[in-house]
Image 1: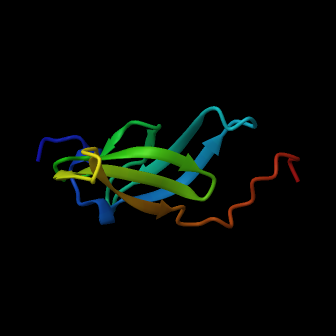
Image 2: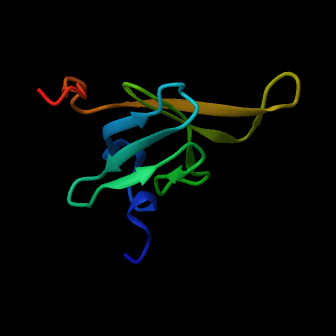
Length: 102
């Protein structure tokens, strides 16, 4: 398969290895991988999975990411698109994040 690793697998194959956020929560990056693949740094708005419509990273939180995708052609009562959401947690949330050097 010649597609990018972030667009190659079902959503449930990906896992979050870690999250980097600035102190004011204005910027955030996540490190994502799939089994047998290298790590990839992603940010809000990046696409993920081979599904169509694709899942998009909606939010990066300290403990994982929230992804969403449009639910086909379904609309809510007001005529707005319906979105599905999933959460992918950091695989090892107990990593020591101390910056003291100890």
